[in-house]
Image (cartoon, rainbow, N blue to C red; front, side, top):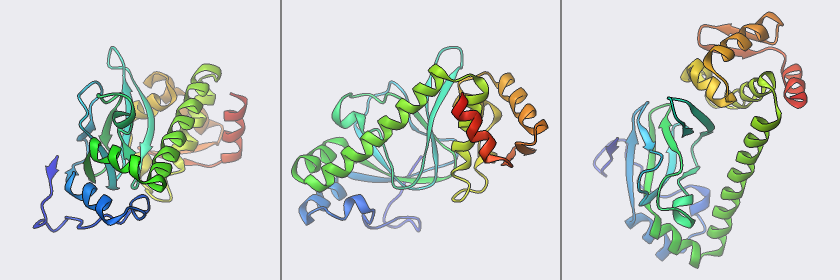
Amino acid sequence: MKILLESDKDFICDIDAPCFRNLHPEEAEMVRTGKTQVLFRKGDNLTKQGTFASYVLFMINGYARQYLEGGNTRNFNLRIIKPGEFVGLSAVFHENIFSYSTVALTDSQAWMIEKEAVAKVVKHNGLFGFSITKRYCEQNSSLLGTVRSLMYKQMNGRMADSLLYIDSFKAEVPEIFQLLSRKDLADFAGISTESAVKLLKSFEKDGLVRLQEKDIQLLKRDTLTEISRRG
């Protein structure tokens, strides 16, 4: 992680994301004075599960993987974070620790914003508060869908879910599968790496996907969607 200063060529000077455009001048200044701009290199941790959280992160550019750390090196991937999303909102409204870890998939820039500054703006600006609440609810809805998949779907259904989800980022990040290891893919599906590799080979044999080293091309999305639906 590198702190970016105004003299750095990569420094982004203003708050221009849609969620910040409805701020009053004094509220925008509160956010500006309470933020630090940082550069995360690929592989850097943005957040670490269980550590004290004094800030929230707002992704300016780049992509990251959010995951829960388990025992015996077993993790579970929750989602891919893209530009314009917040990381660590629960630290503002509920906990003082990060409840998950986040690692940069690409070089990424973010604002570290003091959580007290975010809380103050939410209390005083209804439109900003609505935007934050909407984002928080969307994240929770996505997490509930993930839990539902884990509880009720078999391995092939979970793998189909994971492939379709990751592939949805290909328009923005054509190399998205190449940024993820087979273990990462397995951790999205909640299965072992060995099972993930076997399922991928089975899907390839059935003509559903094409495996090209680390890249994966989905050939029959409709069939994968049906596998996902049946679970």
